[in-house]
Image 1 (cartoon, rainbow, N blue to C red):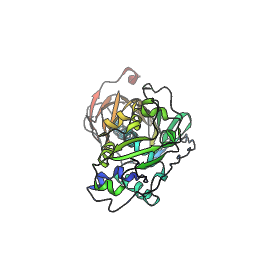
Image 2 (image 1 turned 45 degrees about the vertical axis):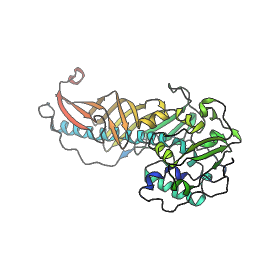
Image 3 (image 1 turned 90 degrees about the vertical axis):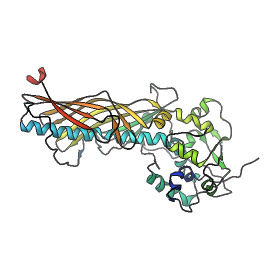
Image 4 (image 1 turned 30 degrees about the horizontal axis):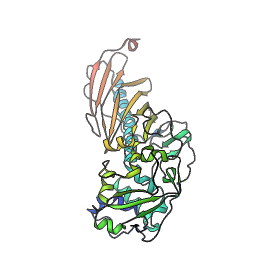
Length: 380
């Protein structure tokens, strides 16, 4: 039995969370009786971040922390230690932005293929779609800019010499050795000239959110990333799957309640991430590098977390420095970090250690200071 041809209304894919609150009203994103052809989002021009260090907005001076009494630090050194820790924690929290974007991207990867192609939508609905996706906290447009050698860059609030990069790799390339040069965010990279047929309209999906809708993607030729789909085996034409509104909603939450056919193996794409921070807060400069755990997109989406190994975390204020030792921090959903950082500050006659503990996940750490002996280097 041939399915009726209808324009794919991707708003239906994300509508369940809004269904309960009535945010959709009577929006109808489908135009019955039409077939559409997606177009590639195009090649983005390579950009490189500027090679200057940015000074961020001035922050009120931190109060003198408890735990530093008796550490043989002068009042000026106590103030320097407190200020350094406060500004360093601000820079570390940039990992939440980076990891959060990576988690959102992983959860949105499948539907993102369609969102990147506006011709899959009824024209009058696309603007409403992007607004509602943004209100829901999803990526209506992926925030990365294409750079050379398969690198995708995202601008950070702390720009200048600070950047966040992603690279995508073939399934099972868990060492992240060879970056894919093709655009992983557009449908044409997988199926060229695809057209979409559905068996249900948007109002029908809204009326029966648990009822399966039949999706059929007819394609003209295979794209350069077609090997990622269908676990690398030959692709049928059309590529089909059945999913309800509830199935797509669970996908948005990092869960899966149905099979998406050949698109299922899109979750096996491997992603690697790198962060470099070199930022200046007033007179405090902070630097560090962080590498995200190389993992399959499906793993990131399901766990809702990205572990970062941090290297070279330190800050400087005039002649004073704060040096950190940590193995990794884990970015979790909803703006939280997990893990512990120990910082060391050395004055002329004494030293102190600050422990910043996010526990198993918190937006802000519990910070404790204690006195420590000077190292041999600090005594010189």
